[in-house]
Length: 141
Image 1 (spheres, helix red, strand yellow):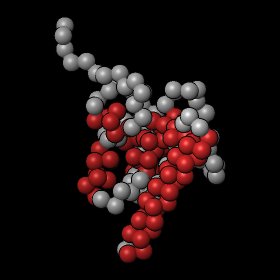
Image 2 (cartoon, helix red, strand yellow; image 1 turned 90 degrees about the horizontal axis):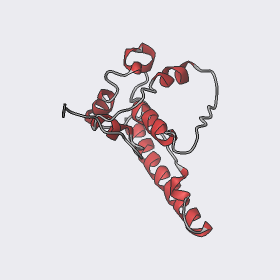
Image 3 (cartoon, helix red, strand yellow; image 1 turned 30 degrees about the horizontal axis):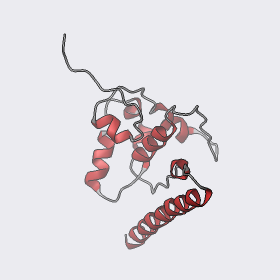
Image 4 (tube, helix red, strand yellow; image 1 turned 45 degrees about the vertical axis):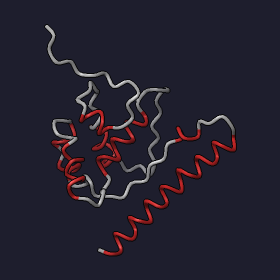
C-alpha cells in the first residue's frame, strides 16, 4: 500500500503545528461555540495528565487571539478550515478579535522551589510585557 500516512502527534502542544503537519487529531473545536454561548464567568477544564489540556488551550488562543498582524490572523483563521467551528456564525464573529493571556505551569516543573518560582515569575513577566504591547497598540488605534 505504501501511501501517505498522517503523523500521530505525541507530545504536541501547539495547535498550529498539529494542523500544519496534518497530524491525526480529534476535532474539539465545537467547544468554542459552547464557551461563547455559556453564561459562566469561569470554566474549569479537568483532564487526566497527558490528555491535551495545553493543546486545547493553545487551540483557544489560536482561535481568539488578535495578533495585530492581518496576515498572521488570516493564517490562524485558515487553521480552522474543515473543522466543526468553521460553520458557526457566532464563532466567526469572535475569531482573531481579542488579546489573549495564556499561562501554563509546565515551566514550574523544576528541580527546586526557587528555580520553579523564578521560572513562573519569568513567564508571568513575559505575559505582562506582551499585554503592555497590546495595550499600547490598542491606545494608538
